[in-house]
Image 1: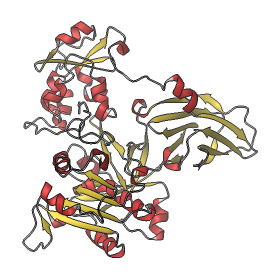
Image 2: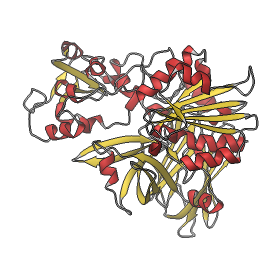
Image 3: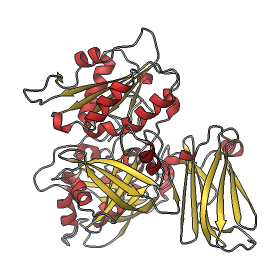
Image 4: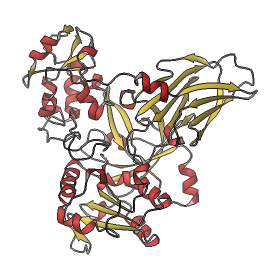
Length: 507
């Protein structure tokens, strides 16, 4: 996943850049899967060449190891000999070579800062840099916001109490603050609250002086004020709020904030088709977490002492929900539509989870904002397979709240008819809302298929992306496998669509 985003097409605000910033999977040789790498790390074989010794590495020494047969990389001050990992890297050897003999932290962080490289490369550790890590990071963004920004922009908090409650008030100074921008976790008397303010993250991290029974979150979009109302377990006065913990009251770039996980319980799993399931995970009781439209979460599994992490975009329980389903969705549940790959390194383990088992789920990640749909008259959703998942909530939201909308069309690519997710629900929505249209396109259809056939192409998209009228505002959202997305973006560019009109979701 080591990749550097360029300033060229596709759009800069894509969740993960394609071509330059996305991960292009390279076919691996037999015996070079992730599970094979895990076995190699557990074999006891010396993967560093230093026979277990740890050394200090100078900048000059690091630079010497810049070949495929002798490749060292520095990540956050730790140096790894990635030579034995070359053939196991899904992104290919060339991606690793971009960081050969240098500090690869920025390259690593561009796409997958959430990956536990310390676990993935633990047997490849050479040692630490002999100089301060920060001196190597040319162009590294500051660890906190500039003093000017902090003064005018940094949130602050205060608190007050009654006999039964303690209210923490966070002043963000930002309008349009909503509950989806606030994540609160309470466990072992530790309160952790993270607030997303544009591209920055504000953290409240306190060991409370007394225990609480419950809490609720209230936000004010007009003032930017957030209230976390704690219900006291004992109705006694608190002398103080509690003890500040690591990074409390910090305000830094979202990309620099560590990804936070909590354990969630598998509540149900339902077959959607022959290889895709709808998983319902229940958040902990003391957790406030609402995933914004178009954002994803990471699932984390520990497999043979190694952390494996995969991103998934939450959906709703159904495309068209009744009132009972809507109420169920609001009770701290996260629904994930996941395709099971029998030869995969992650989903087979996920598929073995039983009802009641737990898994780590991260706080929301992503950069899509619903404000991008404001004023849009035509919205096109171009998806392949489970690339449909980011479109679910987006589709529901634009149909219910986008007053300018004239037309929203889903162009849905799959191999066979049996692969189409929620086909009947999509057809019902098309029938019930004249603004919505769906077009199914199959690359390997049966002889009985009477719909569209083929793969993504300029001619196909030219025919599918018909405007409701000329010269109107348009947004095109794209999601699917890397090859599909890259080809789609080339086609859209050929058809004259600008990068401002396109947003790319990545699976």
